[in-house]
Image (tube, rainbow, N blue to C red; front, top):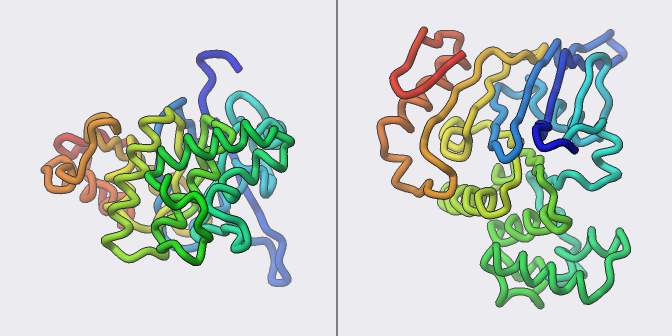
Length: 270
């Protein structure tokens, strides 16, 4: 992959599902570019195609038309080359494996030697702050801790792209905010680009360099808000009380409701 290659490039992508009642257009002519190391959230009403777009990027489905490149490769080749990690709303940990063994799983599947697996799991346990829980099983962890393990597992093979589909959607608000802080830190420390699906406007704004707003079906991109909240490495809870945060939340909400202003102070919209 060349140094200038983007993490994700989506060009003219549509996805039409054939149903008994006729074709359903889930996505219509979507263009999206995510730079290396950039955090981009997708937000929109239920059924707008956010998760469909993520699945297309992850090679879990194929577009009806258009093209997708993941780090300069087609989605299938990117999947085979393990260019990305993926996390869903449910942590999906194997209950009979310890925390460390769950993190090691993708490495084991791909034939990595036991010593290297253990060393990598130890690094990631330190990164997510769960070193003392390496030998615990998932049912001994809180929901937030389980999601941290799921994120560590997604990072096991050092991908430069994380695909995340509402990973904090099932958590209570306090745990959710803590997990947002953790994800900002992890993304900054690993340098991975992130494509993050959410229904929460404040979550999208806090986490992201850009928030991409999608329309009701058929899903189209109707606006992009540059959040301009400072670098992710220095972003803390204090950002949630700053004027720029509230301006960005307002800009996203206005795009969602089709009332976006020409300009919002501190936020670039387009």
